[in-house]
Length: 337
Length: 138
Image (tube, rainbow over all chains, first blue to last red; front, side, top):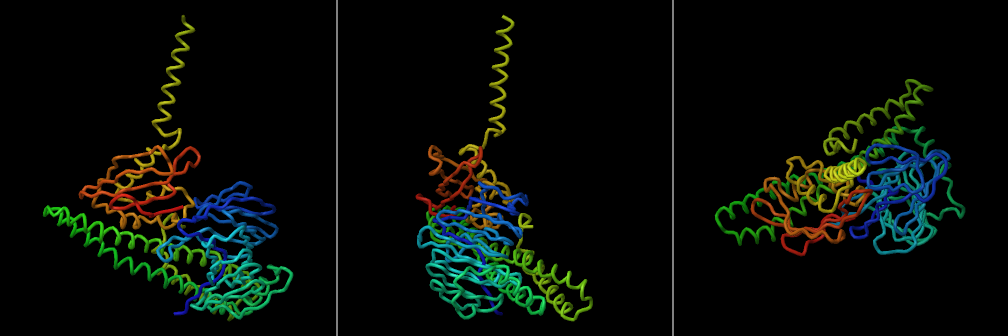
């Protein structure tokens, strides 16, 4: 199965760095904050965003967030959510850009710079200034102004230096590096281009989303199946320890707890963090990319009823929903919905 | 005389009201209350509310919402849990021993932060023996 990792905006900090909470430093135009509780309200200076909270800007909206040494400029027409994941035994916060564009500016580098994630790739940030664009079809464009960024998708990695850019389509490895124009790329023009391609071949665009979802499913299931393997083992070890205690072999029970049970319980619990991360990422993909594509195509259907392209799109869209319901929905919690 | 009586009664009522508010935690959740709530939630077979003891926005927040996380970490079969030796003077270094019925024990350390009126956990460290090692962090 092909995997696809993209670049959107996920800002993560390593365990000790913990930089997830972000404050709204400036806002203008149409901009709202969606809190984890489900409450949505107009963004206001001083709002604090935590894991699970998101920001959405309208066509004339703009928000500036500040987050421990990082300034994020959220441009018009952007949707993103703060998330986190466990990576190599450490928990990493992630700022997920679903649609739109965000510019990151780091005051200083700490060596624990965040991951940036979109629907199609993940970018490891070593830079001080970069902009990430996420298109309506799930594509991402990463432009580095200062510093360095590594973009990973489909198991392939591209290293970007200053004044270099790369585009990643969902389900595809990163494209060829290129030198971006000196003036800032206009998100609307870039996204309109994606939209035109999407409308020209909606089935192909939905196929890309489907592949991205398959990647999330694979990662979710990897962590889930490992958890299913570890969890009974942990229970067996715990049971064996209880038997030692009942037999009065307290010293051995204590040693078993310290050397086997405690490390195993940490390892098992960390797998929960992993499958939670990927399943919640899949939920965002379905809601914001797949759902948006569906609405666009439904509008198109009114103008061109009976289009074969639309039928093909709908077939893939239904496959996406079906895969989601089968593999991701069982991993979600009530608080996610 | 009558006026004095009324004042005394008002004072008694005010003290009573404050005690009531405090008892109902309407004045906020203290550091000690938070530890007690954490332990109490561990003793509930449904661990769905465990994450509510932590400040929203910590890095692990989405992960710890899953009750499976807590079941893996601290087996419900070892309940009831209780705490002893609570040292709560410094909210950035709240330590206690978490005892279970097996019998077993964990050294726990919390870093707490006040959110509104309530003290919330932002980091959690745990180990079978002191010192506790990093588990959940902000």
